[in-house]
Length: 209
Image: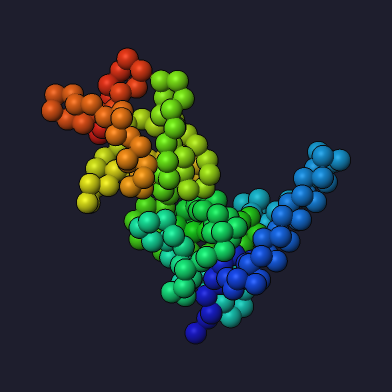
């Protein structure tokens, strides 16, 4: 039986995680320096190839993996929690969808593998006010404005919202952590008996049609 690829180009054991992340940082820094010197002659990553996601797995390997993202936004590999903070943070930035079948994949531009998502692929870890807007602070460290009208309440009262509208394979769904939902409480009001979010002078109903 073919072996799963596992994490793209990175092993999961703690000792090698540190070296892998460090080496990746060195490679990235070298690439950035090269681009600064020769902006018109930047190296092409495998992921830039139009057929990258159609390349077969290496001989004896499979594109399937045991990697799983749980409902709280934690990665697991072979039933072990990915504890290395640098690797876990990197994996959140590798989330994408396969362009042909729409399944969730992890890709770092050099390799890719399928993985399992128990709930939502992204997590809203916190929020912050920016003028009359609410910015979502996502699990991949990005931020984006929130439109409460597009959100919905799911199982157990958890709040979900679409994010990354323009990303490859987007939009994606993000689940608010309990902490992020607690941060919303000072902004919550009621409009016609339904929960809404106060944005400046406006009150936007959550999940408004």
